[in-house]
Image (cartoon, rainbow, N blue to C red; front, side, top):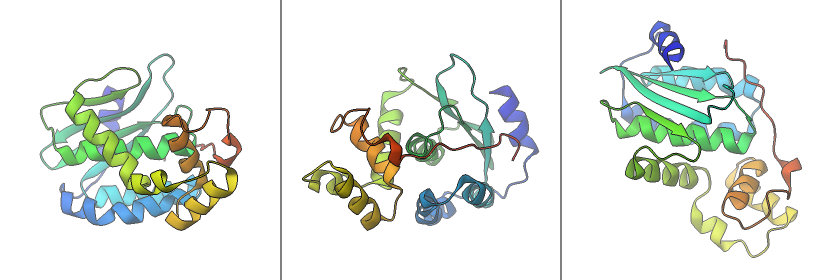
Length: 194
């Protein structure tokens, strides 16, 4: 985390502006259909304009850390994402989860999203809900009658979102087995030096 903070401090950003973030959410969400080489530089620039320094962390063995949000000062916040197991469903869920933590403005806390560990259940629950609903509003998941490939592809097309994200949501909610439709997901290679 200290290395990520140093990197974030060196990044030029505008003053923090949560209104700009809210206005950028749809644009960021639409990036789920793009290759990381295309979306990641754009994502970093959009967040920079909002006062958020985006840092990509390497996979740290046995750390189970997916993301960290830390306020550098009142005008700048760091959002660091781990590229560990960066399948697109997990990446985008973690991204929007951490983005909610940024919007919560818990300036006196460093929020660490760690698998199987809950730091603050209210903040975490809000972030989980925000990530799920931003990517796929529950009403669409609940309207699915079949959990087959055709239904998944249809829903993804309807929502203009990558089908791997639909698969990840269905797996997480135990509507399909973790072994099903993984070929619809994409594995990202995101350089930590970008």
